[in-house]
Amino acid sequence: MNMEQGKPWQENVRLTKHCPQSGKMKDYQTLTFREISSVMEEVSTDLNTDFVHRKAQHKEFGILENRILQKGFFGIQEFRTNLNGSFRIAFDEAHMLQNMNICAVLDGKLSIDLKESSFSASLNGLEHHGVYAHETEYDLCIDKDVHVVHITVDREYYAGLLHDNERAVAGIKEKLLKKDLMWSGTGGVNLAMKRAINDLLHNPLDGNLKSLYIEAKILELVALQLNDLNQPVKMQTTRVKDTDVFHDIRSYLNDHFREDLSLRMLSRMFGVNEFKLKKGFKSQFNTTVFDYIHELKMTYAKTLLLDEKMFVNEVAGTIGYKNPNHFSTAFKRKFGVSPTAMK
Image 1 (spheres, helix red, strand yellow):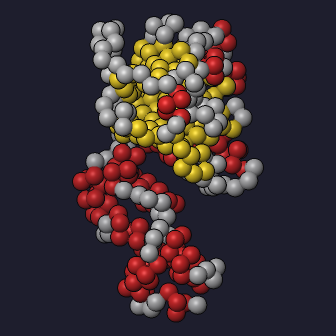
Image 2 (tube, one colour; image 1 turned 90 degrees about the vertical axis):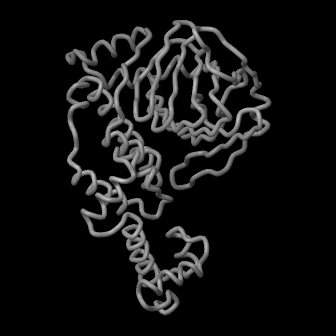
Image 3 (spheres, rainbow, N blue to C red; image 1 turned 30 degrees about the horizontal axis):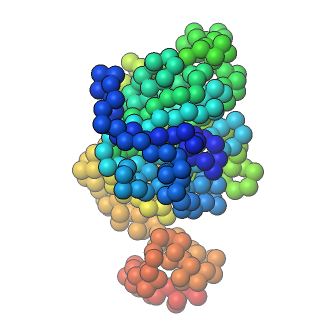
């Protein structure tokens, strides 16, 4: 995936329908970057996180969305698709020569095929790997719907993080410095990695501190990934207690209640199915997930009205209500007075 800011693909990108079977390409359809760029639009730039959000939609392939951020030695891209079928996307990107690539599939399935080295690797949902290849041409084979977070780290910077006296990473460092093909192997996206990824995508800081936060979270993610791949048996056999998970979910809601949340997203983020999430959260805290979110929103709204002296419509938008009247009704039901009475 191209991490060049403001340019989701380079001009020689083509989309090829269906992944190859037994090394042979069948029934493929090619689109030029010119055709793709004609339907690629910048949806928004998130002023809080500096991510540029772009969307391409075409009857030939469906919908591709990405959020891109480039900061110094690092690049971050969140990639979502809703395609008409499985597609093979061919890339030719110069940035591959200089960057270590960390890929985490949060949902769906993805595989990479390197042209020159004939290397292939696949990732299913909640799996990750790291790849370095001193070559520019590669194909991504993706299912209809995928949610992927792809992070690039400057090769020399990444190598500088690794210590020669640690056997597990010394081989990785040697390959990076020699510019040899390096694949970390496949690991599972555990709860700590999910949190680090989510923090990267939703940076809470402002100004110059954003860059420090990004670097810190990427370093955290690198450490977690190397630890996971270095101790596969331990990571696969360790299970977090259910009560800990539900407390972690509640802590997450305390920080992110203003965002657009769903049970599906929470269940995937914390590795529990939706039924268990609903039942367990209610049993642990005597309230449902959405009642808890509602409680947080109303309490926060009251604070904004009393302490910040915000207008009712401003408060409604801040906590996720599109219609101020709906917010006023919910607020009065909760506190017994209308929000205007708080002024």
